[in-house]
Length: 592
Image: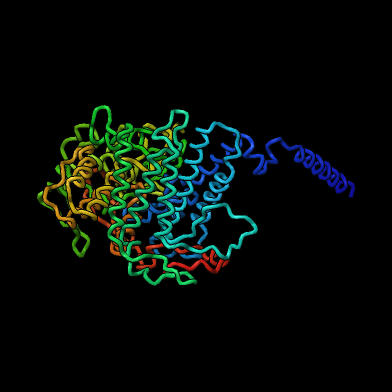
């Protein structure tokens, strides 16, 4: 009994002491809105918190980074079983899923920007800087609306900070064309307030070309078949009868082309250009775009710090990695040869490739010599020889030289399935693009990472696509597609292409140039071709076999997964059922 009383006394003393400590608050702990916007340092911290809602995107396997898109496209299979992309690929996702909470996280960011814009005029500060801050917040508000629209389509427009006195049941999804018009107008407002470039002390902050690039992208999506006159959504209305998707308007393509060209011209006039390495090696030209932070091609990037988990997910087993980010054989087949010809033109019913003999591609046999710049070792399979430079900058394959030695993905190899646990290289390939070869996992030494949302090379392809749809394969379409190809050591497109032939070329160019940058998932949906691509089997090498680099058994194409895509249901995400339960005026997307 005495022991119990002593214990109780000690606990009471601890609680009293902790309570007194807790009540001794620092001056910054009781900030309200009035206080926050009465001092510059607090207001700047509030704006920084609005930047926080920009998704990191590098962690395609991580729920909190809100990028299930790379693993749910035909670019990649993610080995980690906890990745949300597996649910998308199997058709097992639903409106009852709470993660990744893109809806809540983006609206949280929108609310921050609205509060900031409602109060920033109260801050005692330099007027030039206040203008920049308003431009940044205005951009972020538009950006977060677009992050929502690209997966849900029609969404509510939140152009002010809601108060407790408002009737939340009046919040409804607005027609997708109204949402895009709002985003475009916000981008125009932001661009008028922002600078073309920022100083070294403000790297990572929003600039004028970022706002112009977002506008061009939003208008490109609006012009595309998913939203522009899609018959699958012609009858989708809210409970007041308002149509949420419009009739087709061909002029939307021209509007997108004009916006993209304005961004390109303004950016180039202010020092932006396609990145090239110091030695102009076409592999490094492309590879370093994603390693040299804030280089002259980048219009907007999200600083991710030392993203050690991303580096681990991208590196082979024997390098200390997890071997999680595994490109599909279908993507490998789409990289061109060094002569600019496609190696694979299709597939037989049994999945075997139809080889383009004119390309010089060989599926079998082994190379006697290593790559002249050491991108692969001697004895590598011929299927990886004489491929286009972006292949060597983007893909780690069996026999590729990585950090000074050859990768061994065959079963018995140092990076093979036999030596791995639950995470392993499931396709026989790993993503190399964006992965820094100077990082040393064993020494716990990592580089600073960024994720690029907008870059000039992407804007070139946005412009070319929109212009081709508006006017056909005119000179400017060729100019900007060929500029992207030339940077990576490829020859120009053939002359005399029809609009339809050029469309196919642009779609292919986007697949390769923008691989792993989250564009592929959305491109295949806005073009309405995902139903044909994402309902098929995906393939890789035979990772369960192989005793050496030249073991033929490893180089057999194997089915990795049979994916599920139900049209039109899976073209748009479902609004979380929890949100609809809160507000019955939010109508659900078709099929959910």
